[in-house]
Length: 77
Image (tube, rainbow, N blue to C red):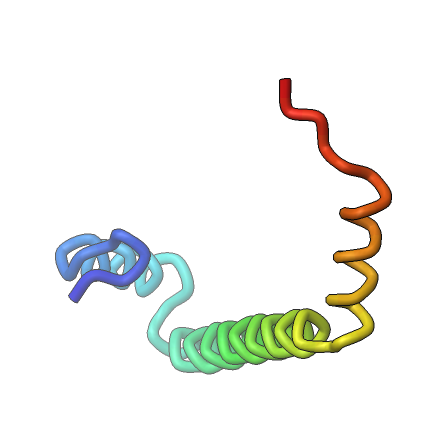
């Protein structure tokens, strides 16, 4: 198991430190909050990607990009 470059031993150490710092009563609450936060970030990321893809598929955007490229030819010297 390798999430964000963190393996199982590292996850165990992080869990043990969290248990010592927050205590066993608050740990489930923190886990739920962290899970909801990560789900929110994932949802926002997917929505952002969906909007970018939709904008790139829009014919007006494609036409504007092609007309802009023809008006300002790049000079690669």
